[in-house]
Length: 514
Image (tube, rainbow, N blue to C red; front, side, top):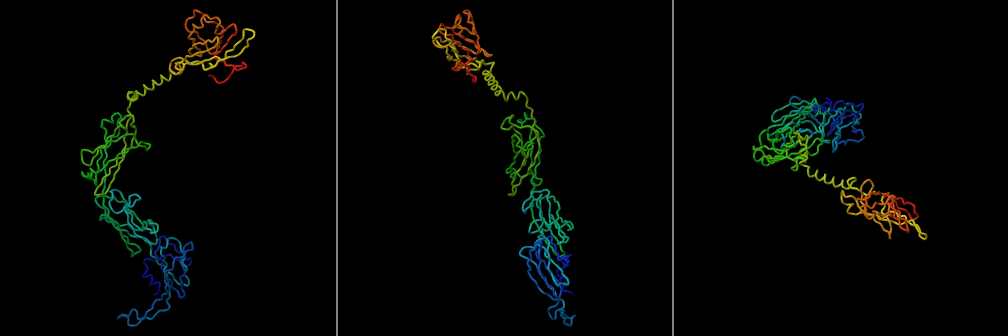
């Protein structure tokens, strides 16, 4: 019997298969606590264990062994003679281990002088069972009823994640017990497996056992208290906007715990919140009135105008989320459900007139007022009339010289500020000592009326475009900004055109219109 056969009898459950001394290569798909190398040979020497980067795993112990080291071992009534030492059987046992696990990966084992090599290992994994809702693991305590997943298997203690499969763990056999109902799972699907369960009732007892590598076993157990808060929602599908305030459209909510109504104390302490959003995910413009129902564990939710106004309330499709929160046996529970309702816009022209009549009246008054300042509703003087029009003074006597003087045109302030009132003003078209001033009023189309016509009627020395005003002329005499006004005296002839202004040398001055 060889040393290695004896070692195999002791370590057979963890033997590493597939090792070839020719390439000295090892590959581990899980972390290991330790690696044990048995090598037989007269001059055997176990060197190092290195990873792909050349880093060495610590050699914890290195022991030389032989088949028999004591005299008289094994003497019984059936064995009368002392076994003879077989000193020809030599070998070496090396244990590789470090403070941290031997991580998964490829390694190279350095062994020389060996006739045969056998390798054993101890996995550094943890057996675990968990109850999951989605990707979230439930902690022991109280959970809600519903659909869950029970996951069992081995966890990599370095990453904390379940190991999907591993040739170094063999084919584990799992037994899962949920409230006394047992289900067996074989390891053919990997080092971790899961089953779906529907949790109901008052409690959940979860126990999981595993048998792997023939003689290895482990177990895990958890206890959960189950409290299922649920609700039934009966909602209207659509409602007319104008009918919201009558309270006919309601949403009825009933909360239950493990399919039973809440107690009166739980109902009194519970709260119900309502949130609604439109198709863009923004808050829907509506208010919700929440009242307790006539029966324990029920509520009545009624839509109301936002800020009490029909026109402030949004219409269209609304997703309404109802959230019930309750405290049961000292723990807080919540349940939410979303329903879709449609608020129809049934407003008509009469509703708009009732709502906006003040705005309409004010807008019309403002429009009427504004129009009073805009032609043709307000008659204005031509913008070409100069504030200081030129008066050309042509001498009629020897010894006098021609020159240019300034007239004057000014508007009455009140006529400019009042709507619909034509602008009025005064035009002085001859200088002192024969100063002549016409009171004028804008009449549209660039023309204006002389209001004090009588002051110039029958005065042949005063002409407008070459014609004097007849003595018997009635009404107001019409002129324009380009009318040539002439006043004749024995000394000078004064000529004034309201829209002309000249420079000192007699040239027409051009610039911005006044």
